[in-house]
Image (cartoon, rainbow, N blue to C red):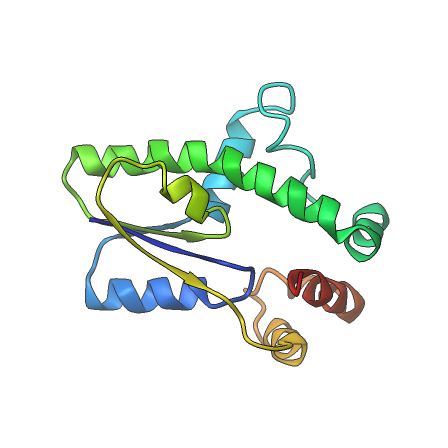
Length: 166
């Protein structure tokens, strides 16, 4: 069986997948990791949708302004990138299906419209954060050095929190 956990950034997908694999040990992967591997083995000419925002550019002044002033364009890019990551995710899943092994995949690239196209059995849930999570996200980033947001200053994190409300 393939299990999918999709949803908005910071909605609890990683926590849910960890609980799932505690109850039922299996391979677990994040579409973020799959995206990073795909970016590492391709270039912008091969897969431009995947490479639009380069490593280290997330908190660039230009990107932060776009998130604030034109969130729709950022959402459109994120959707295109997720669709591109989905191709690699299906390749990844195929390996485990051929071996008859269960797998769990979590990430923002798990999109309902892409799941509707698959021709294999799966289980899926989608998580949506309730209310403004800025305070909790800031606190978690400051108290957990392994949180990917921990390297950013409060302004960047607050801007990100405003963006994910869209």
